[in-house]
Image (cartoon, rainbow over all chains, first blue to last red; front, side, top):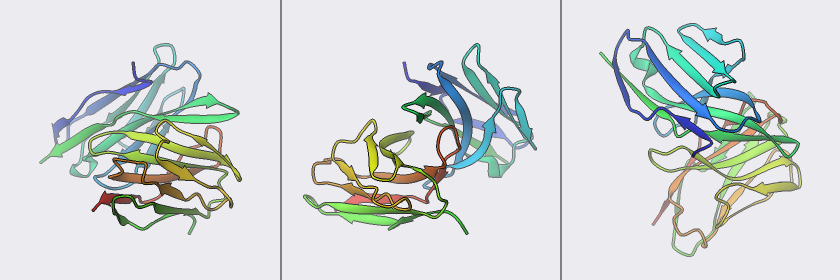
Length: 112
Length: 112
């Protein structure tokens, strides 16, 4: 079983749709969680950190469920510009520092 | 502006040749990382360094080498022992611990 697993894509949705991505992690020593966005052949960019109480940034909402060991990302009112690959990243306590584990990514394609 | 600079953007390697990818950051970050990304796949960790003059192997270190002589710099050498080097290479850094990761713009390495 992979340490971090994301919904397999691609997700093809019309503009204005609401779409949700899920990500599960297996290591209970996981301490912090992030969603990154990656456009084709570009570097990943931080979309949002994920906090225990859940957090929202405009059309984006992130949730964390420690008991079930999953995080989610909800995108409301999808725009064409939201088309990208979304990466779930988990930071695990490791050797007095942290070890970052990346999910394989979920591709989103928003159509007119 | 603070950031991470990777160079070159594109690099071609001849068979049997060693090539070095540059990564420089002026964010005063302690931790630096090298990742490899193959088409349609997630990021895999090659090497990381949590402090100057120290570095650790990641999940796919064979055929690669690194140095960390200065806090700002973490070059990656792809040696001739790496038989399948064609990939997108990403350098990243963070302050440490549970902090978020910042990425350079990547180097696309191809074999001639």
